[in-house]
Image 1 (cartoon, rainbow, N blue to C red):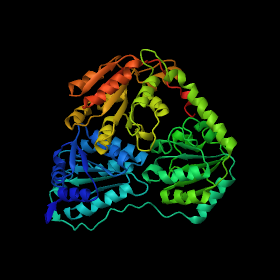
Image 2: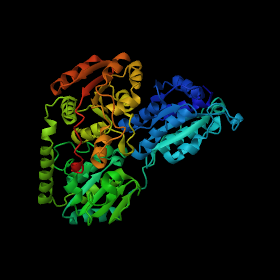
Image 3: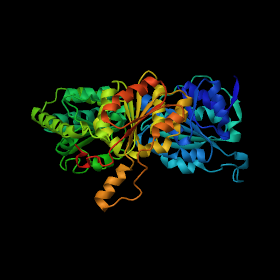
Image 4: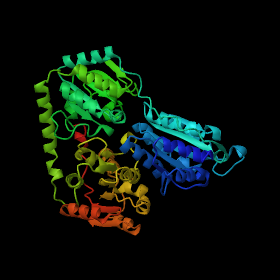
Length: 541
C-alpha cells in the first residue's frame, strides 16, 4: 500500500518493530488498528476484560523481554487497563497500550466515552500522549516502542481520536530501526572503585533484582558473583539468575546474608518495602552500599560508590575487574549452614499428609511435577507467598508474579501470554481462590484461543493474607471469608476446559498429569487447610 489510515500505519510500525501479538477487547474506537493488525499479520488475541488485555501485554514482556502491546477502547477501556499500567510501572515492564479516544472534531461536546485519558495515566507511564495526525502515526508508534524498551524500561500509552484513526497518510520506507537506549557506558574509575571495595570486604553480599533481567545481563551477573565469590540473593524477575543448589545462591539465607554483610552490592533492584527500604533489620546498619543499576531510582540510603547507566556493560566490566577476589570461606560456610537450616525447618509443612491439603505440600508437589523449563505464574496472596518461598526455577524468566504492585487477577493473562510466547513449554498458573475470582472468565478466552494452560487453585475459602494477620493483630477478622469448597473446576469445565477436584495430597500429581494431557485449559481445584498460615516470622530467611 502507498498510503493507509492511522490504524494501518500504527500496525505497520508495530510489525516492523517485531510485534507478533496484539491483546485487545473489541471496541468501536479502535477498529482501525484491529483492521491494520489483520492486514499486517499480527495475531489478535481478544479477551473478556481490558485489564486482562493489558496484563497479557505485560506478561508477554516479562517472558520475552520484548515490548508487549495492547489496544483498548476509549473511556472504560482505558480506565480498565490502569491497574496493569501501574503494575508494569512498578516492575519496569516494557509495554505499549494504545487507547481509542473521542473525536477531536467534537471534543468537549460529550461524545461517547469522552475523557482525557492522558491526564489519568500519565503518572503510571514513562510517556503518555495523544496522536495528533495520521502523518505522525508511524513515527509516534515507533518512538513509543523505543521509549518503553529504553532504560528504565516501562509502560507507554498513546490514545488516538477516532477521526485521527481514520485519517490517511503515506507509508514510510522501512528504514527506521528500533534502537533502545541502555544508558551511558560505565565509568572505568567507578568500576575500579567498586572492584576495590569487593576485594577489601570481609562479608560481601549481592542483592539483584528485575533490571538485571530487563538489561539481559544475567550472564554478566553470574560472571561477577562466581569470579569474585560473592553470595547472591535475588527478588522479582531476577529469580533463577543462579539455580537452586549453586554454592553462591542463597534464597533462604537472605536474612543473615544482608543483615550481617559489611558490603552490599545492590544490583538492578529498588530499595522498596521488600528490602525494608534498605534499612535494618534487612540491611546491616553499618554495611557499606554499592549501587549498580540503570539509574538512581529508589536508592534511599547513601552509598559508598555507584555505577548508573548501561547495566549489562557495567556488570561485564565489574566481573573482569573483581575477578579473583578472596573467597571468604568462613562467611560462605556460615550462610550455607543458615540456608540448610531454613530449608530443614520447612520439612514438616512440605511433607504434610493432612487433608485438607497444606498449601506448602501442594506447592511442593507442583514443584516436583513441572518440567525444568516450565513457566510458573503466581497470582494470589498467602498461597503465592508459599509458592515464592518453595518454587525454584533453574533459569530466569521461568517465574512470573504481580511484583511489588501485587494486583490480583493478572494470572490468567500472564499465563496466556506465556503460553503464546513459548508454546512448546508447560505453563502452570498457581492461583489463590480469591485471585481466581478476579479473572475467572478469561478461561473462556483461553478456550477460544486454544491456549492450554493448567491452573492450580489453592482453595482454602478465605482471604488468607488478610484473615490471619487480622486475627493476630485485632483478635478478629472482617470481610475475610469466601464460600468454602467452591467448585472452580466446574466453572472451567462449563467454559469448555478440563476440571478436577482434589482433596488429598497423594492425588495432586496424578491430577496434574491428567490436566496437562487433556490438551485444553484446565483447573485443578485443591481444597486447602484454612488454618495453615504462612510463616511470616521467617519471611526474611
